[in-house]
Image 1 (cartoon, rainbow, N blue to C red):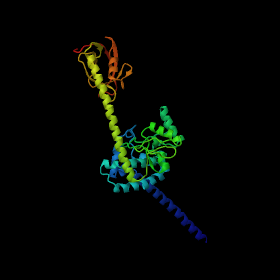
Image 2: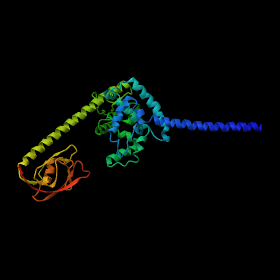
Image 3: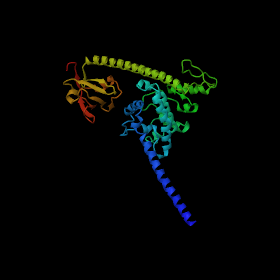
Amino acid sequence: MGRGINILGIKIGGTLVIGTVLGIIMTAVLLAGEAAVSTNEFCTSCHSMTYPQTELNESSHYGALGANPGCKDCHIPQGLGNLHLAIQTHIVDGARELYLEFANDYSTLEKFNERRLIMAHDARMNLKKWNSITCRECHRNPQPPGEDAQAEHKKMETEGATCIDCHQNLVHKAVPETDLNASKSQGKLVLKPEDEEEEDEEDEEGEEEGEEGEEEGEEGEEEGEEGEEEVVYEMTDEEKVAIADAFLKNYHWRKKTEAAKIAKVEAEAKAEAEEKAEAEADKEYAGLGIEIAMDKNGFLKVISPIEGAPAFKAGIKAGDRIIKLNDTDVKGITVNDAIKIMRGEPNTSITVSVLREGEAKPIIITVARAIIRPKY
């Protein structure tokens, strides 16, 4: 009987050792497999994912402070404590997107964009569900400047908001933003109003029972007794594809319209400045003797210094970008304002700070004003 217990004891001990070893091996295989399917190479093995990867590489997130994040850094929770979330994401989301890769035609970027809003919303809802844990891996305890930003961050305590509720379209191509709290509660894709002003008006009208809801669609239908109106669509692929296409076209149209308006204003301002500059060119004045224009970054670009004029003698060259006149930063000021600063009494000095191609630091040049004539 004693020998039987000893034998049984040996068998039990051997089972524990074998089970422990197998557990370690299975855990190692699981971790290695999870790491393998979280690489950029694996993610972009599906052709359609090469589009978002290109956008990531061109975004401000890539290369910031030396960090080059990959797909997993935003879309897969990291660490042993979040391993279950990573596995769930790969099994559920990965299987769905793999099926859709074969079920849809993603051969061109335009065709991929037809489902971009749906995929973006699914990714946002995942981040919402995880309390933006992947964002917080880098952005820990952010302290935003400004009262508006601080008020928005307070919503994390009062409204259950998280990073992704506000910070959408930071990396990939912009698509209409979605209201994640409303989407979560209603089980439907709910688009955000186009601007905060419209959203505030909807909230105010929604508080008054029986008032007519603010019109956002062309038909302007009322929703509910409170009259609060939201643009809501059922989560079916056909409807979402149609919505995505319509909103993308509308979004790009608005962008083009805004760009055209800005270009028109800039052209008019430039023409006015050139006209005034030409009128002033016929007068005698004490200045530096340089022709300048505003560049796309808001700095003053030296077109050319007048040969023999003070700026020419002081060493200012064509192509220099003026960033400061005395203690005044020139970024954002008009060409006329800059000219007024540069002009003054003859033989008085002005300090000009310029950026020059090939120079690592700004060059500070002191120029003595002199009478400038059309034919110096």
